[in-house]
Amino acid sequence: MTNFDYIIVGSGISGMSFAHHIAKAKTGKSILILDKKDYAGGCVKTLRHEDFWVELGGHTIYNSYKTFITTLRELGIEDKFLPREKAAFKMYKDNSVVPLMSSLSKIEAAFNVPKMFFKKKPGHTVREYYSSVLGKNNYENMFSPMLQAVISQDASDFPADMLLKKRERDDTAPRNFTLTGGMSSFIEAVSALDNVTVYSSTEAVDITTEDGKYVVETHCGKKYTADNITLACPPIFAGKLLANIAPDLSELLKQIPAAKVETLGIIVDKSDVTVDNFSFVIAKDDDFTSAVSRDIIAHDKYRGFAFHFRGDKLDKEAKLTKIEDVLGMDRGAIVASAETIHYSPTLGMDHKGRVAKIDKALENYKSIKIVGNYFGGIAIEDCALRAFSNAGLV
Image (cartoon, rainbow, N blue to C red; front, side):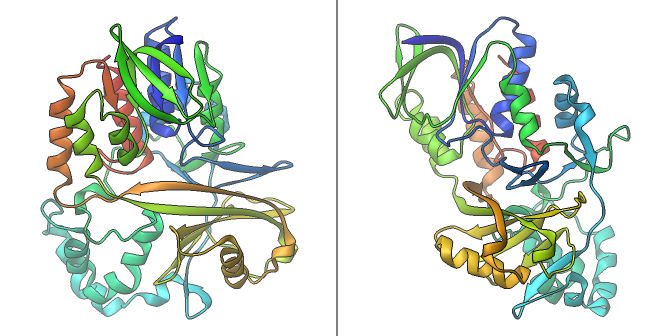
């Protein structure tokens, strides 16, 4: 068995951020990152064709993501910061792409928005809070689909204070931006660090202990050992892996539900698409929650789109038909495509209590760390914050 100082299961924003912080603070320590997908990146996947790229996940960095921005700078890739251009928000309804604001009742908004100055988010669900400050119809017709587009599932029962957080901004960074070459540039920068080894297409199936070390067994029967283990995968999978070494943690993690999200990304010649430029298209009551465009970074030849579909609803043929309908194009125009699956955690009003129990239980396992997008929130910055704080505990 090959031994490492640290093994991280999961290569998304959380796992890679944690690996960076360990590599920076623990010079010379060996780090192994395992991922069952055939690429490193988790929710982050960049489809590339010639000099063009489109994101299948992790579309935007905001300058309020101060922890993540610091990580990018420490990795030496600030020169890749690429400001996003403005593009319209659209909605897909009645088989047509229409302006998002066409679903807004200005009268209802004018009557309710002043309540925002008095009503507080804590203790309320997303539906309760935003129905109050925007109006019930505005919430149902526009804002609820908007949030679904952001997290690829119905956000109505989420705690209101865990989404759309107000954060301090870093004015030295663009207000919102991506990375030249795509968000996978971050994943590649961490993968290239000294003493970091990344194995994709390598699923961890069991974790045990032997002679004071953790033993991680993979799907192909190969085993790796380490003094420290970090779970950076969806909670249901983390829970299964911890069953033998931390059964109390295992049960807590397996209680956290998640929505399966299937993403299909495409690149097409600009001349083959009839729909006007947009930032994203929000879908209401459809089998996809959103279509995110690369139009925010202009290109002279290509356009790119990522469609986020609800899990297990459509096969690939039906997905392509939906894409044709939304974009007004023929699938024969697609010059490159890619698919991925990820799980978006479903956070209920009891979630903060469950997280507190997880963190309390972790106090009994000093060499086990759990990071992800289901602790302080589901944004990229929430992943980065959890990774940073837990790396500091090692």
